[in-house]
Image 1 (cartoon, helix red, strand yellow):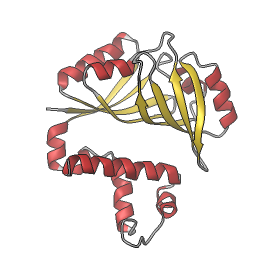
Image 2 (cartoon, helix red, strand yellow):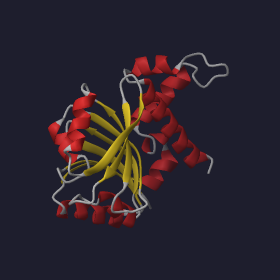
Image 3 (tube, one colour):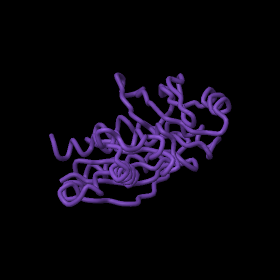
Length: 215
């Protein structure tokens, strides 16, 4: 029986922790993360901030970051590839992989990470929680839910609220019709977010629907 967990976490020793402390107004969406070497995972992050040059200058002084490069931009967001340093950084990636966890959503605002994860069972979540406590990571649990039951009952439990909102709005406006009756920009304006952000929500939401009902 899988378990869904939603929580907030913060620590200067988490990757990008010093940057978030220095620039609490920045918003960071973790798009994906992978690792050839589990000690140095690579993260692709969408970043929105008022002063991109200041953000990049802050990254250069962040001890949790080994290197970074900007790989894409939109009107409001920039996509960065960030290599974690091998210094004394909390090894959250390696730990959640070792207990069988899956990162579903991860966004940093106001200096804190808002995280949604799926674990194979409660013991796996407990082990990950204990690891974060041992690393002195501030942790605030918002919700635990039966992941298996949630998937059987309704899509609200395996779609995030933002993904569901974007998908419903796109459907109501005819975005999925052939031909389309609206544009991505119109949906983005309705949600007051960037085109890239709404595109990501739709793509991830559709991916989860396919995983649930077609695979």
